[in-house]
Every structure is written in structure tokens, then in C-alpha cells.
Image 1 (cartoon, rainbow, N blue to C red):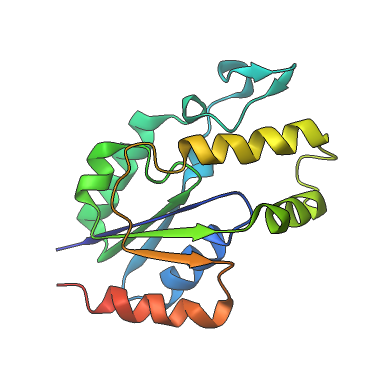
Image 2 (cartoon, rainbow, N blue to C red):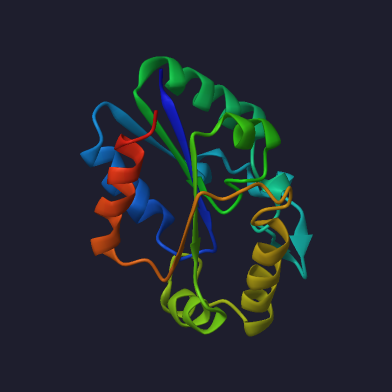
Amino acid sequence: MAKLILIGGVSRSGKSSLAQYLAQHLPHATHIDQDEFVLPAQQIPKINDRTDWETPESIGWQQLIAKVKDSLNNYNYVLLEGIFAFQNEALNDQADLKVMLKLPKEEFLEKRKKEQRWGEEPEWFLEHVWKAHLIHCNPHQTAIDLTFNSIQYKEFSKIQDKIELLP
């Protein structure tokens, strides 16, 4: 039976890097990036005239859940990662392993300021991203199996070992 692994955390915490690593090192695994299910900008709420990507309403949940369901029928391991990885209670209940990647606020700000994907972001917006993370990272207080603070690449294999030992 396929295993569902949820990987959540704040922006720039290493979610995608971990999921990509695991997809390459686990047999018959697939990586689902929550960002692939972001709705068109005109359908997403705004904050001070900026698109608010930091809200769960920015995700096409039906499509995401359908992709997870289909992937669980076709792969041994399904790695779902994103800032809202623990937002959906049904996925939380179905998950075989839940991994939370944390960063101290100062490290988040430093990494996010270096990120150029969205252009220069004002300080107020970075503060909004941080606060939104605190609100939405685990809204149902689901039990997290593994938590890492400022994860390092060398720790990825430890997570792989835990996954391979899942019943």
C-alpha cells in the first residue's frame, strides 16, 4: 500500500529540497508540490493590493486532493509538500508520516530577502508571510511525527530511513 508523506513548513525552510531528495531516493516515489495548485491571481484574496499567496484560499484543493488520490494508486510513496501541507484534515488523517520544517524568524527573513522570485518584497509583507505561517502551518493541531529546525541536507537520509521503516 502506498505511503503518504506530508512535508510542511514556512517559506524557504527546505520543503521542496527534502521532497525532491526523497523522490529520488525512495523506490517508485512522486513529489507533489502544493505550489502547482495555486489558483490564478485574480481568484486569490489581496492584502494591501498584493496577491495574498499566504492564505489557504489560494490553493485549488479539489485538484490537489484528486492528484494525491491518483498518485496513491500509482506510486509507493507520495510526497506532498507545501506551506499548507497540514491544512486538510482528510489528508492529515490519511498521512503515514508528517514532517514539519521550522526556521527561526530571523533565518526566514534573511533567506526570504535573498529570494528574487517575487521581486523585492516590502518589510510589512514579509511580516505578513511570517504571521500567516504561524496561523496556517498546523490549524488543526495535527500530531507531527518529525520536526526539524533549520534542516540540513545531511539530515535528509535520516528521514528517508524513517520512511523506509514505515509499516
